[in-house]
Length: 209
Ligand SMILES: C[S@@+](CC[C@H](N)C(=O)[O-])C[C@H]1O[C@@H](n2cnc3c(N)ncnc32)[C@H](O)[C@@H]1O
Image (cartoon, rainbow, N blue to C red; front, side, top):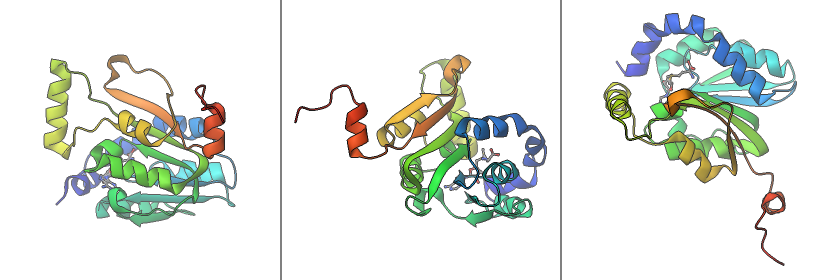
């Protein structure tokens, strides 16, 4: 049995009950409007899905996805008015430009190919679309961080990728929602550039001509 299938059958049954504050933060920060389309990447047991469905209303669209069959099975039970896909976010075309917003809670760092998963997320967003990310960030070279990196690698196959740096290679604007003490965790919003003209118009060093 895979790690995340095991998690879906065991400790996620408890974690699920306590995810409310983070879920609300994600929905509020994204500022979802009725009628919007939103993608939940690495949705786990789908505790965020009902909040997303409520936020985008009956004219909106919620798609959630995860690579663990057990997670998807649990998520589908609570996915009224949402579609839950079984897929690998590192190797999936979510649908180019189909989403106004996306969210990844504790998900990217758990994936084997973080750059590919982030590139696929960006591709799924329309120009101007936004992505809310909550994740671990183990970049410091302290003893604690080295231990955390080793533990996460052993438990969940952590690749060592820095989610924030990877977001910055794809998204033009990546901003912390708030600073986290110790910086072992990150909460950020990333925006996909509107178009090339807007990008240059916003950049101080716009080239002449
Ligand atoms: C820490 S859990 C977070 C789940 C959920 N977002 C939450 O907040 O409860 C990480 C999730 O990422 C999923 N995952 C790991 N690798 C994945 C991949 N390559 N593609 C899609 N999902 C993946 C796992 O199955 C697991 O459900």
